[in-house]
Amino acid sequence: MSEVPRFWRESRHRYRLVGTRCTNCDTLYFPPRVICPTCRRESVGKMKEEEMSGAGEIYSFTVVHDGLEQFKMQIPYVMALVKMKDGPFVTAQIVDCSPEEVKIGTKVTATLRKVRSEGKEGIIQYGYKFTICP
Image (cartoon, rainbow, N blue to C red; front, side, top):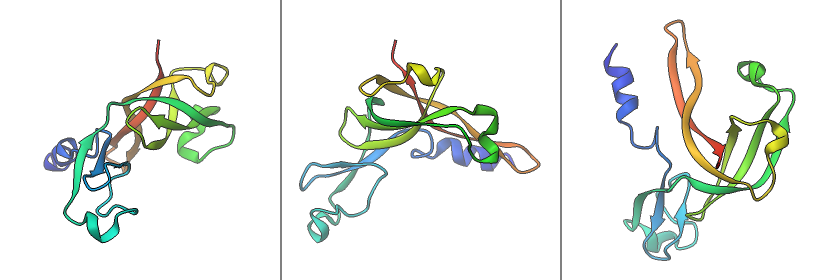
């Protein structure tokens, strides 16, 4: 049983913003891709993992007032499309602020947070969210 949490902790993609860069056209993708949608066949074997900086700014957002059961305690919460400094867009929750503080163009940074707990054992699943930069 103790090996399962260790497996997830050691998974590089699980706890970091890791994308893939096509070394053919130099485009960074998130989530990671095996083949570049622009270069197609020419990108086979040329996609390299790259950890993103975590810095970005809010491109668009919405305030959720009626969400899924596992998020009821967080209502209202903010979901945003974040334009990463590294290039890709990432959809994520903005945390540790009121919805009124969120504006288009606001600088944000990625943070690791609890997303949910699973099963009767209460195994905690973590993932990325974003906070407003000071």
